[in-house]
Length: 450
Ligand code: GLN
Image 1 (cartoon, rainbow, N blue to C red):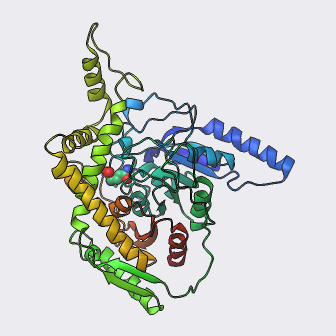
Image 2: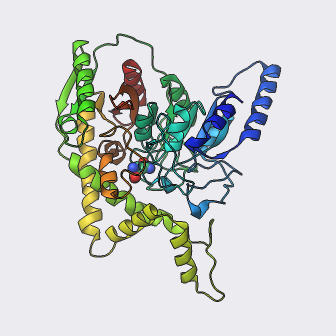
Image 3: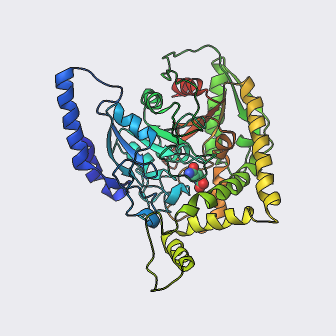
């Protein structure tokens, strides 16, 4: 009920799409009664979660922040949600986001934008902006989001909290609405590394419903509390810190941190990465291609919204009208772009080329992370921007993703941790990227820096 009171006080943030207040209180009472009887706790007993509204919770609304699914209810729960519930977590509501997780600001929601928790003139980031705002403002303790190209790390960075995107395949995608299936991964928002680690331990692991979920056993991800760990071997990309889009003050903060690490006896080497300027373009070619296929299922027949058509109108007219009215501008832009790059005559020039870039990026990442424990980099080139500021310039909005899409193209685990405050008053974080399935090292390094 403390969380529900805070939610009521912060209604203006528009962080939640649906609130499950009565049900959450009922569940909390039932859990209390069980504890009285059995005197035992589970791993997440009574922990209050919010879930991004692209993650299914049986018999609850699942909208993807789209008109297309505004009245849709899921008949089953995502594996991640199922596992939270088994450990007695309480799900307090579904969280706002960009429509179908496409965006960087949570301005592309049919339910209106979410506002930045520290300054309502600014965006909270996206696409999981509702999740980041809710955790930041203590409207829930932890939240799930999804990260296809940065949608957990970037809003965490903007809102001054922790955002973890695990290795591709670490958490089952069963019950996560697909945007770009070979990139999508459920991620975790929190304020404390140990909480994030516990949540990962609960929801990670193999799943018979997702063949891309890795069979590797789940380890303990709890970072050991070691204030002076043995010398670490870290790296940063020279091109990332020298990039002209990076805010100067943010750059100098990260450089100071690197100097401090070196003084402490750690190795922090500059490495070269030659593809920085092509990774966001490659990401947008590949993800829009996958999105154009994944979103074909919203046709007005099988799911959700159906436009009203005149008597006798053809099926094609019904599809057209439904998709024209049901999808927002950004989703349509991406379906068109994705269809274009997959079309005959353009496929090799765009799609095949972008696949080649993806391969090169993965190889480079492997080479670097074979030698170093983690890569350090910014999460985003600027702090949170103003509402509306980037809405007329989608390419500018896309290019801001240059630091986050690296981990998704290569399938690597990455985390944004809140370390800094800009002179403009807004927080920003540092991003760490580790090798495949090196979540333990990633969280340990994060815990040391926090
Ligand atoms: N900003 C990126 C995009 O718009 C990331 C989205 C995501 O990770 N879901 O595609």
